Length: 158
Image (tube, rainbow, N blue to C red):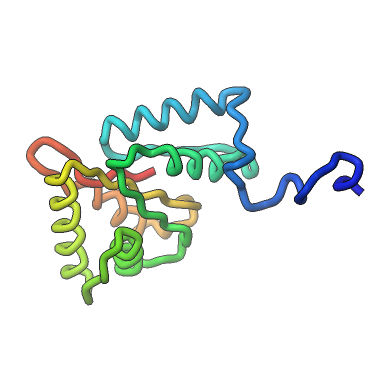
């Protein structure tokens, strides 16, 4: 019914956000600009909060799409992952084959982050549904922001 009447080519308001339909109206454009600025500063954790359906995922996907070429990103979409699996997922998203065991993966991630930092690159990890992560695993994720050089954080989390 809607397709013919409005001349639509696909269903509107799908559950999966499509950044092609991004509209910067309201405060969305300002929020995106603020997030781009925060990522540009390269410090710690950025928290995006809002009601269900308010566009948090769309905003973060748009942010990921607009990151400078010097920023690599990883995406954690499953809040039930344990610490070891989070490390493996981050490494895999960064194009690495994860080592076996938590200590080896931590060392590998640190080495990868240091190498990218030396090459002038930064890494941002996007965490979907972070409120669903078990507290121990959330703390583990937070502690990853302690990976740093003498002057710079090596990992940023959104």
